[in-house]
Image 1 (cartoon, one colour):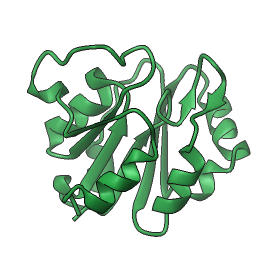
Image 2 (cartoon, rainbow, N blue to C red):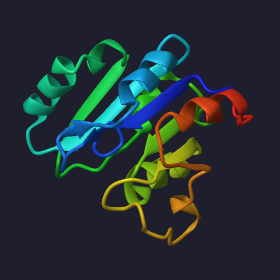
Image 3 (cartoon, one colour):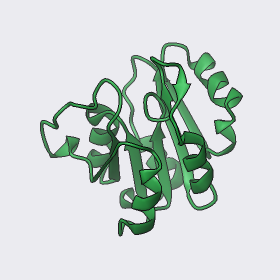
Image 4 (cartoon, helix red, strand yellow):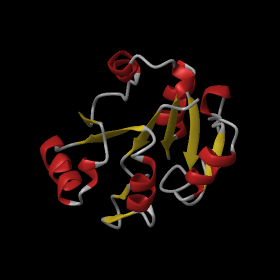
Length: 152
């Protein structure tokens, strides 16, 4: 049963090139917040500006845990595992980068969902760690996966 959902920020929630939030991002997060622990992870040059952007858009009220890392650090979900103490298979990772979020989630035994959008949307996985359990092209598809995908 999924207890926590880890969302990537860049290109999954927010399109950095277009400077726009993804269509359906807020409604999906609003729908999931009452049922799951929501976690937001992001890497950026300016961590303070990123946190302000998240707060200004109102996303901070839906996430139980927000991790904004300096650009040069790698995403590492082990600290999230320690924070909540759920089993790895009780997490669902949603991200656009097979080389980052998907690889890290799979490495730890989490369920993964690739959002096919952004610079890596056409990348082909090079190994099993880059293969997501699910692939979507619209964030609203996450709701159906959690409802009907037999992962709960």
